[in-house]
Length: 244
Image (tube, rainbow, N blue to C red):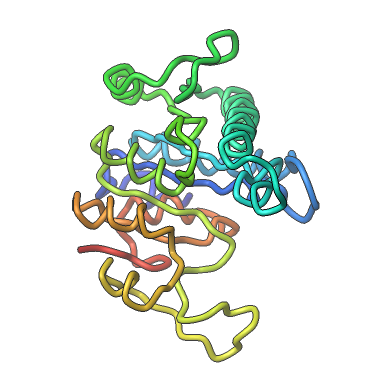
């Protein structure tokens, strides 16, 4: 974060960041890359210094993917429950990385697991945010058949976030996979109805409709680009902005 950014007030005072579990792997095939989670924690630290209240929803795909396990014959409910537990593991790792950088962080779970984290209670989550604590929301919605994208949309609405940031490994939303289609077009701005009509795969349809119907703006950014979270909170034109 530059000196100018430190003195520029954020446009969005409260943001929710959706981190995929796969993003935590780095170049590994499985698990958590300590360098990646440390870098993300540094980015979050910069957000807090800029005066932004931060909530995080983290996926579990680096450990287990419920839908993938179900596709191979496992009972879908059991598979999704395993995926929820994987998100708790990632959330605890994120909490540790944040605390090593001097931040206060709380893990709140949608399923009861009181020995390691708090239950998710909306009013308590908002209070943590008001006290400048980073709130890491684990276990999705607590229900099978719902993705962590849907959980992120729901939690962003519940805690009255001003912006939802989806952290990916590409610099926005494209008309096709840019790794497979070299001439894929990147969008600067999209409407939620366009995302649905064009089947762009930003998030699953449930997550998109939740954001659309509740007027929750979304910015899809490249999490590997240094300073991208702060730039998004400052209202800069980074990544792809999705709105109603």
